[in-house]
Amino acid sequence: MALDPQTVKVGIAPIGWTNDDLPELGGEIPFEQCIDEMAAAGFAGCEVGNKYPRDPKTLHAALKPRKLQIASAWFSSFFTTCAAEETRMRFLEHRDFLHAMGAKVIVVSESGQSIQGQQDVAVWPNKPEFTDTDWERLVSGLHQLGELAAEKDMKIVFHHHMGTGVQWFDDVVKLMDRTDPQLVSLLLDTGHIEFANGSSLEMIRRFGDRIKHVHFKDLRPAMVERVKTEALSFLDAVKQGVFTVPGDGMIDFGPIAAALGDIGYEGWIVVEAEQDPALAPPLEYAKKARDYIRQVAGI
Image (cartoon, rainbow, N blue to C red; front, side, top):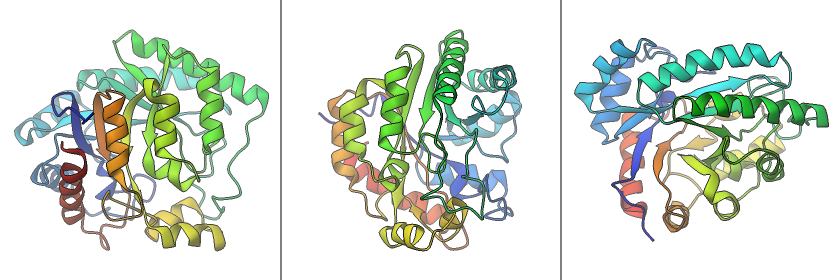
């Protein structure tokens, strides 16, 4: 079954223009250029980057003439390293901002113990391993966030991510098995699960009913191998181009789009490919991604 363009929207993340974790990548690109080029490339919406105004009225005023909507935004939880109340209070502010922007899902990733931001630590062998107590704290905390999201008729979607405690497919299985499906949904990130030797198609087969948000991210295979053989950090892998947009890397998104159609997926598909904009001109790559998704997914 094909994806329905009436119920699936295609957006793009601003990290192809300005990187949140590596501000030197695209630090000179203004917010207005970013959203102008998103609209010019044919996207219906976007996620939120570090240059976006956080006042809903101001952000609405910027996006409306460009016919862009907000799909979601990243939120870092620290349940495995900090008091749950600290994460809860930050989440409430984040939730209310996204609700005011009309978003229906909130991207959550556990950044406690993460090495994703440590440029001197190899990502492949050094991802954190959670203890039983860590898992208990994470599951309990996510349930709390899920309840808070439900107060606004929203859902949290958990983002498995390289360099975090939920990196491998087995980590995702453990988290999904331990969490309440009514409170904790899943974000499928094609690039991160394939980078971690997993399968996007297996994620859809196993957890399709819980996938409520999707990131289409591609990989350059030669760089994936370099990350392993040269013990590169996550940030150095990004700087050197491990990620790219759909249609420019190793992943065949046709079967993935078809599998999402088969489960009746509804929501956003967001192109996310953090790159150095000096090496990968954002508008050019945004157009390439949008054209490719039309071709393989029909949306």
